[in-house]
Length: 175
Image 1 (spheres, one colour):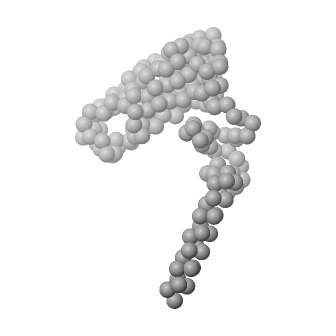
Image 2 (image 1 turned 180 degrees about the vertical axis):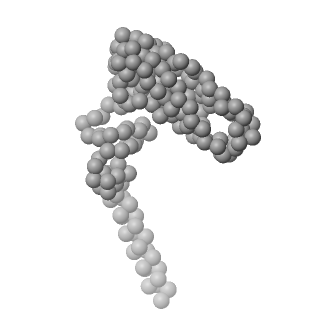
């Protein structure tokens, strides 16, 4: 009985490793699973470098958003405010603030990506280009759960504007 048990476990283990190998080699990913079960092909897709794409992604689209933005003609942008203070807030509260900006240059503006200092801070920026003279919004969602005291979170905006990286920030006194 002991040898049968070992044989069955070894067979199950071998099949599991084989299945995982096939899944990895065939390229089944969360993108493929999303497309299979949602029947649409739209949503958020994740590249190996961690970049997030929204919408339909085709194999011929190999350039990253950052590469596309880097090749664009430079422009300028101006934020109406670069700092926001939520004041005193209870721990666990989720807060949102919208930073408004304007394309003050002569060429289309596109945001490549944002960098944050903490996973508690989630920026959402426009994916389309902003024409010269037009305005756009960057929405920041901050979750104060697990944080206490004076909190300052910086968000770095990368775009084809000069300077290519601009910092905006939020602050809260979490109690």
